[in-house]
Length: 402
Image 1 (tube, rainbow, N blue to C red):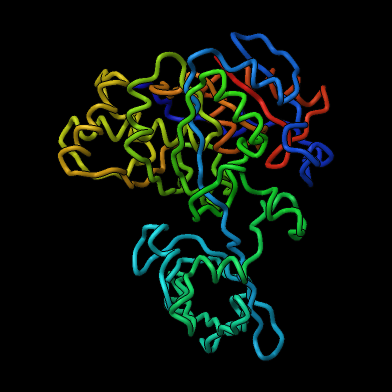
Image 2 (cartoon, rainbow, N blue to C red):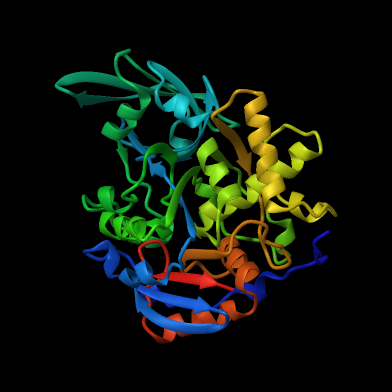
């Protein structure tokens, strides 16, 4: 069993982040960012284009191909009061994002509602959208105020909810950017390989990759594999408890194809996660394999589940168990949820390397980095600060190999 302390203090995982270090806008070109390369305790300063040479031969890269949806929907009451509805997670007709995004005429979501006190009378809010020269009326109604559930309906069954959101929503920029989205944010707050609608925050480690870099890696024989974790707004939720173990970890939906699970089993050498979301997905899949070996088929990884087993199951055994279960049930993909909480003391079962941006002080993501490279996280962040790196979602990158 992994050792878990009775208390892990948030104050041990904070650092000074001056506002000028926060990248408020993306660079003109994705691959112009700096890259801090940490390997075996050594730090080198590179350009992100150098990643093409830094990835070791026969490595397998895992990318999160979730697609950010314009999750901020703005409505106005007849009085002129603005109500902002931020999509969090689908409720009906299905909790599965890919299903809901293709739904026609009506959907139900759990939301954050800005200015909700002015939406008292529960009269539906409405706005007119123009799609392919057609006018469509979109309505939003409070379905359950206490649970913050909002029902959306529209009057054209030929139009999917994905198209509705694309036509009406705004890019959900991280709150710490403290600015409204602009035209350039729509393409730039999205990876070039994004494919599946559902995220309300970008898997930002992938923002640095260009088609040219991906081709260069492929030409070297580097294996590329894709999985989907729909990043939730909880990724920005600050830890408010001094003992981080008391933090209520957010849950996120994962969708992983059989080929990606097979690629873990077949990996010749190191497995490198592109971003903390890919890392969370891969590590969660391992624990799902452990569940299956123990006869539990329910795919919902709990916050502290990894810290509660004494079993020593290999990566190959865990992922083979998933493949066997998929074969038995004639499935080509697995869909589950994870609220895995990775903090110092966690024993990594799948990932050998991590490409990631520089994260907020005292965040769950800093804890993950500290779990991966140990106390050297402070050295990494100090060097980044002193060498003028740009921090957070639109900032520079790091390639971490313990």
